[in-house]
Image 1 (cartoon, rainbow, N blue to C red):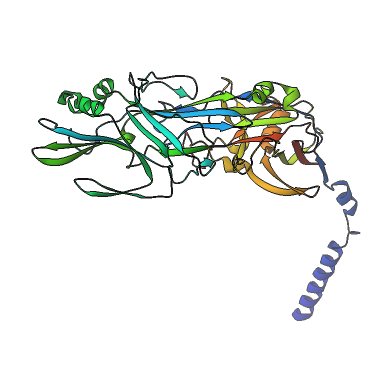
Image 2: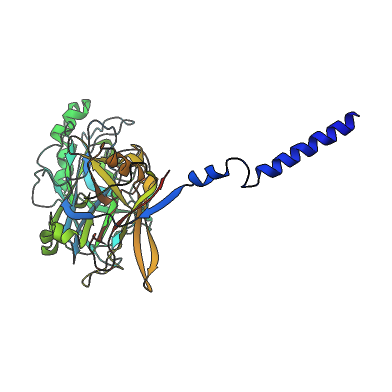
Length: 451
């Protein structure tokens, strides 16, 4: 009897489940009413203009990290103009060695070694040569100042104390150097022989100067590293490398000796200056020009302001995805094989102090990959073009709710995805289609649902 009851019970459950899978079952009319309405819009009105960057932060005393990857060059560009990048640097005694004793010593040579950054690629023409020069600074680099590129100049003696003319810095080439004391295998670097008078000045310092870093820095002139010739190639140097150092080779008591001052121990500040072409000068802060073409440049050069002038959605809309899409434009005078597009562009907002900061989609992290923006390729009307697509969903939602101004700023993303500031610069520039470009306009694309 129990078995028969169990069978009847199971059959009843099966029948119920069958009815539940039938749309004609109870509540079927509610399914139609609750059906999700998915919409897609890419016709929002945008306005753009190229603007001057406020300058990249190159040193901040509140952050115990300074830039280690520093470019040097006098880079010419047929579209943008010229970028002059140099380094101001001072050196200190290493924390792990005793102060030098040069009593009775004779100077043999003083050398400056600058390690090449082997991670950041060389930008521009692969075959151009460099005329590099080193100058003696007239003063010290204050530690307690927040430095922005292009907003200061440290004075230095105009007569170089070291030169390296017609050089070709190669970040892929290790160097073997035979010194009187030993043979050294160095990572890729450049080497300057500096004026003996500079080395003799250091050797004549009283030992009391080594009692504190501040006393030493106040009395030992730092160095300015520049490039004197214009070319289409810029190289990045790694000041934090153990191979970036000042070396004094001397003879004392008939014995050859070496004393090393590592550059990473002391302060350093890069200086980046742009001399813009007439094309860029005419485009600055012009919506008429910006709606056709947008110009972006790293090293504290150029950003773009993008305004959303009619950003509205239905009151019951929930954004599934919002993204900005930009297409790379190659101008007739451009040379895309030399002036390559940046690997990533990104978005910023301005805080209450007018400082560029992350949009909410990035979650206050210095990981620019969180919002996309990588350069990609697609075929448009039979032609392959480069483009960038950037996620802006949360920021658009903030604008719709009145938490942010209806705008965003576009710039070239730094090289690193590490959540450490400041980040190394991405040596690059790019021209993008503006909102009214005849073939490749930038667009805000939003997909949303309504209930």
